[in-house]
Length: 380
Image (cartoon, rainbow, N blue to C red; front, side, top):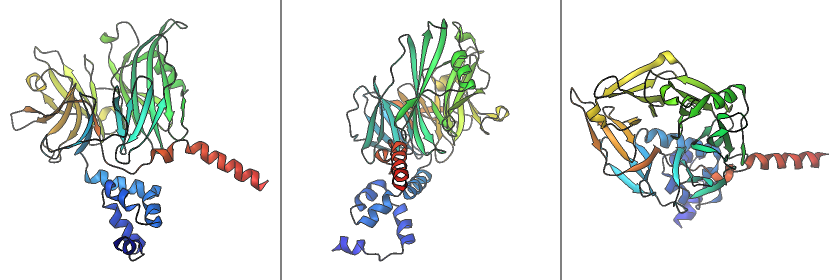
């Protein structure tokens, strides 16, 4: 009886939509069974995007997905403490031998040795995509995952760094998977070709900022450790690349994102006890906008590579990630220290529940093309 009453059009559609916007993804999935009209509304692409935007704003800087050292995943909610909430994730598939590579709009990207897996943790919707063949002389692999807002598409990127016998030098092979097209391609552009042959991409997974994936890179030579470091940005919409000059450092920097801005941690080894500087690029792609956010002493950083993740909601602490651990850094007033969280994570990324349907996206570019071909044939 209650279900029948709810299914009636007792509410103006605009009011109903506003109410549904405030509900959790879990509740909305249940309410899809109320009626066909509710199901249609909740599945509507505009509703899905709007609901995710609202959810992201509510949970801004506070919710993350973490893959633990045992391979399992969980979400954490960081308000002002490091151990606020821990929720175990019940994935729709076995996570054995899988590594979390990135997260975006409620979707996560994982890889195993042969496949990329895109998964919506909330809806249990997922797809497995087989990688193109690797190079025979592969030295290292790095990955990235992000959203192309121009094409409304989700893309996985794999960078295969290898020795080319043909050119007798080291080079990179970049492959991009489009969820809409359900296919891999190798982007071709003059700038990308130059970067592939001139720089070595580091094995750390890419950082997503302003619609582009970013890797730390160095000059392509046997003595690359002695060369300056750069960031290589791959624009997901145009599938073109550009080089970003980083703050001066003589060691490999660690990339991150703070308040939506590209950020790096650089270590200063000119002193007996190296300090770590966190820099933020206030205006994207503007070299002059690099601003030093803070400096951490060696004892605070514990000598680990620390990736900046976000501010705490109060703005007086910074979430950092080092290999296998998550930390909160407290600058304090003349006193600084790090709180180690009670959980250990191999990988961490921003997370907000969403209704994004992987099944609806996958191959829809080809489906749309086939429908148009049929329509054109019918008209003829």
